[in-house]
Image (cartoon, rainbow, N blue to C red; front, side):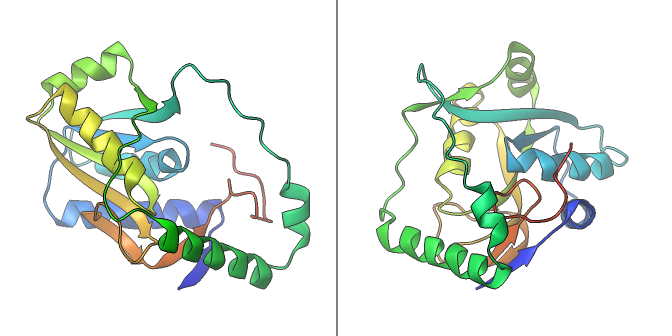
Length: 201
């Protein structure tokens, strides 16, 4: 497993390469959906490429805990930014290792989370036939599979494919239909341990 650090320009290039991979498959999604947070930074450049070939619509979704207060984020950015990338890479790899040995064997949907969908998107989903669900990465796959199942609960006839830049874990609950990397960790501009320029969408 390796770690690749992408700046904003490189992230856009990678996202466009992912778009070209979808285009080469000749699969035409009616709707392209970016998963907040990281997924929208991949989905937006991907959509910019694909909209010139297919009249797709674009939307954003996110999973959030129902009726719970947002947890205060522990500010460790300053500490992480002082550490060298080789050490940060080891920390990331160890985190994945811990996830892999503790991950349950069977898929467990995020029942305590709700999918944030506005009425316009709900209408688009009911009228759509094909959806491309976009995220930056698949780790365990629990989040993207939960979202996929929630979309299917709105319209059971949807054909949903997934596109991500990378799959990080050895095994996940869902395989991406389109991806650029496997067993690769990406450090993107919004990450706490990214030491380059701040990402501005």
